[in-house]
Every structure is written in structure tokens, then in C-alpha cells.
Image (cartoon, rainbow, N blue to C red; front, side, top):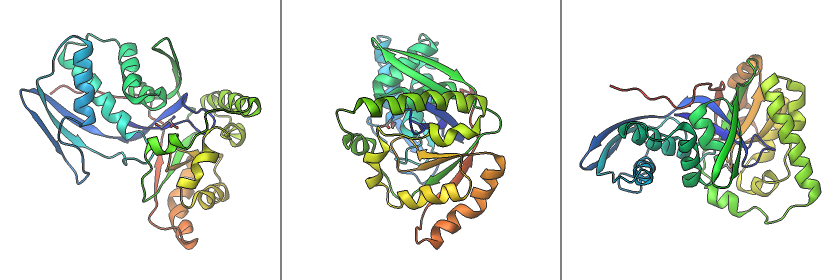
Length: 293
Ligand code: HSE
């Protein structure tokens, strides 16, 4: 299951891209619930585990009861950092459970069920399909288009040492926006999809701009202004908050990715911002994959 970065600045709750960083999950049908982790990451090992919970939800949707499950998780996607770790768990639970039942649900049914669990489609859909995804919900169903990201594009992700819960980040958003702000984001999110698809890097600096969520969330991200400024000094084409934050995503090219890898963290440290990590990633084009042993 790939990591995902939602919003891409202007595309709040509607745009997302899959990235080449993966969680792996081993699942086996069982009469009891047995959950463990292959690494030091703390995960719930009871019924609240998101993989189990999502699997159970799919069984219920198909009129079945899930007796238990053996789950082993390998958690490479940093948790509560705006990189789609929960969506990866939801998608793992759903596609694993669907496989156990002989694939009764279509991919589109799974996309819709994932959104019912997560609440918005911009991480779950790219985690399923890979690529760059534009999604909308209507009448309880998801309508989405997946396109590849242009070959020249890479992503440099600044991952902070602190967490930000999506509920907290969503709780800070206003209930109403002005028409100006709505038009500002609409035009830029449309530009973002075509710029990432076509590789027209010169449009990204404008396409990434946002007035719907980042201005209200920046207070939760210590170092926000410094990281944004540094990213542009290092040659980012466009920088935004990844998902609800707190990670910060820069869109770069291959040369830019090498520069970020070498200088981003040391430059931040020189500015007194410590504990951050840099992940340079490619767009993932495959989405969730299932292997049968
Ligand atoms: N679109 C969502 C948000 C992504 O910004 O709240 C986080 O799950």
C-alpha cells in the first residue's frame, strides 16, 4: 500500500497522489484476532486496529461476519504525518477482505467503501489506484479519474518530528468561505492536475497556492514559514502541506530531488529547526498490490 499526499495545496479533499513509500501487510483468515508488527511502530492490536476494522466492514457490507484475522504489519509510512498511513491501513483491510471472499466488490465499490470509512477520498483513492487522482463524491458514490504524473516530477517531503491529528487540523477550518477564495482554489486545483499530468513545471508555483486550509493549519506546524522559504531557496517548483499536515511536500525534478536530499535537513538545522527528516520519492503508478502466498 503506497503512501499518499492529499490536497496538493489547492485541491482540498479532491486531489491526491500516490508515492513510492509502502506499508506491507500480511493477512491470514483465522478464528481469533492476532495482530503484530514487524517493526517498533506501536499499532493497536485489538478490534480498533484499522486494518481489522476495515476488513470487518467489508464483510458486513457483503452480509458476512469476520470471525478473526491474523495480521502482521510493516509500517514504513510515518504515522499521523499527513502521508496517508491510515488510508493505507483501510485499503489493506478492504482489499485483503475482498480477496478472502472471492472478490465480490468491484474496485469502484472498494473506493466508495474506503471513503465511507475515511470521510474523504483524496488519500484512499490514490492508495488503491496509484497515480494522480481527482475525486468527487456524489450520492454516496465516488467519481474519480486517475492519470499518471509526468516523468520529470519527483516529490521531496519534509517530515517533522511531531504529529498532527487530522481531526485537529480539520477542526481549525472555517464553515464558510468567500466566493473569491473558492474561485482562487478552483482555478488552481484545475491547473494543478493538468500541470502534474503534463509536466509543465512553471505552472506549479501558482497551482499549489491555497486559501481553504493551509492558512488555518499553519499554526499547528512549528517551522512552517522556514520550511516553505527554504524549499523555494532549494529550487522547489511548488510547496504545500501534505494532506492535513504536518509534513510539507515540495514538487521538484530529479536534479532538485538530489539537492533536497543533500542540503534540506542540514540547512534546516542551521536555522535551528531540528528532528525533521527528508524523504525524496517518485510518484507511484501501481497503487495497492496483493500477493498470494
Ligand atoms: N483532505 C484531507 C484534509 C486530507 O486536508 O483534511 C487529510 O486526510
